[in-house]
Image 1: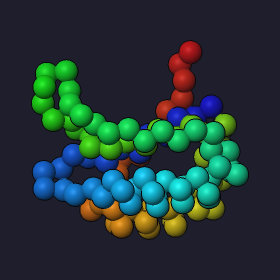
Image 2: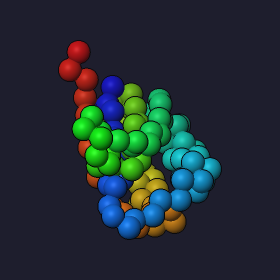
Image 3: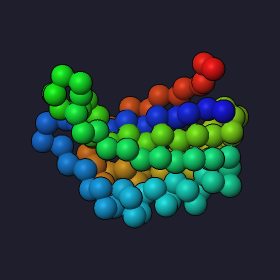
Length: 103
């Protein structure tokens, strides 16, 4: 199992169209990647930090793939289309981190 985290920085003055993201972008991701090994897609919104300061990321998507190979194949097949859609809902550049379970 591979967990891919796509994090959208909470940059001052940045905008994020949550409706477009939830109603258009994420369904696009699911249509393209569900058949290619995407097992779960969980969007989350940053609301704060332990010390009360603003969250470093305004939105994150947690994507679970069956394997690293499935993620790589999905990215090769549809990554360009999916990343080309990002400017339709935000001007910030996402940070993508690939994770694997320790336990």
